[in-house]
Every structure is written in C-alpha cells, then in structure tokens.
Length: 216
Image (cartoon, rainbow, N blue to C red; front, side, top):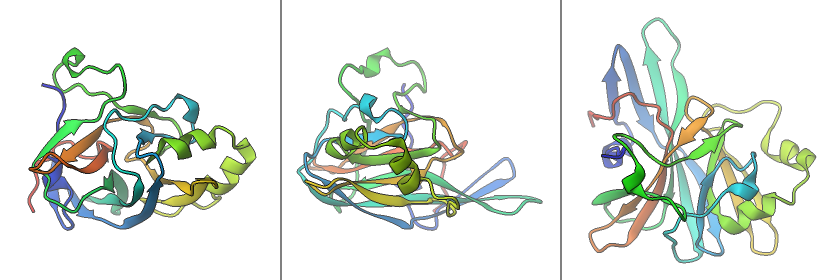
C-alpha cells in the first residue's frame, strides 16, 4: 500500500507522540489566509523553479482559506527542544475528515507506487507552501533579488518561520512559505474528504515523525 498517514490524529493541538526516547508535542500556530483566485492548489517549494510546479488534479472553489502550520516540539533527552514544522494544512471546510487520499498532479498514478511509496514535491530551499497556481506562476517573473529580499530575511524566525507575500497584484494571490520539517527532501500532500465527499483540506506531511501513532 502507498504511504497514507493517519493525519486525523496528527492534526490535533496538544497531541503527543513518543518513540525511541524522543517525544513530540503538537501545536498549531496559524500561518495566515491564502487567496485562491483559480481554486487550483499547488504544493511546492516556491523558491526553487516555481515554473515546474503543477497544480493538483482536485480543485476547490475560488476564495480565501485559512492556512495552519502544525509544529512539533521535539524533546530528546539531554537536548534543548526543537520546533519543526510537521505539516502544512490548507483548511477548505470546517467539517470532520473521514478519509484521506494522496494528492496527485496530472500523469501520476497511485498504482505505480510500491509499499509506503508516495508522490511528493521536492524541497531544496528548506521551505514549502500550499498556494494557488496563479500565485506560484507569478513568482516566475520575480527577480532573484526580490525573492531573496521578501522570502529570505537575514534572521529567520523559529518554525514554522512563516513569511507571507502577495505574488500577483491583479488577483491578490499570495504565497505563504513555512519551514519544511527537517529541511530539504520530497514531501507528500494529502487531501481530506468529509462524509459527503466534499474536500475539507489539503495537508503537506513534512515527515517529522518516525511513527504516527498518537496519544491524544
């Protein structure tokens, strides 16, 4: 079976995980509001080749949606706690999620995946986002110096290290970046569905936990 975490238990403020002498405590600082003029959601590292980022095949109604960055405080014996962004959630509807599916872009087929395999987006600048395709495409026209000035401050705040900027002035489409788990890698995004089949959220899993069996 492809990799499919139980995100319903992970996305809980105060949830605790423990494995191998390491404890993880979850908190959910809000990252901001995302404007989706087209309803085409993209998960990507927007600072690296945004022109190659493809939207997911599942779309939502255009609008403004809440973005939440779920942070894990990692406690290891003998070390100071570290905050890491465990998941980034674009909240579409405030309804219980009854199932999760891997978010796909055109041409991706889950049957091609092996055990615990997944499709995900590559991160090379240590950040990720869930944004509208309009906003991500707009970043392709930004000069490097502008990207550097807006999204890469000299002193990055602690995780989730959220930075928000309007990428497309005509529509107000914005990009909110957050730090990505342990850094660079490939990270899957999942789509949650309510009992009536409506999309509840998109969640990028930054693979912080070795085992996602929660004690809530």
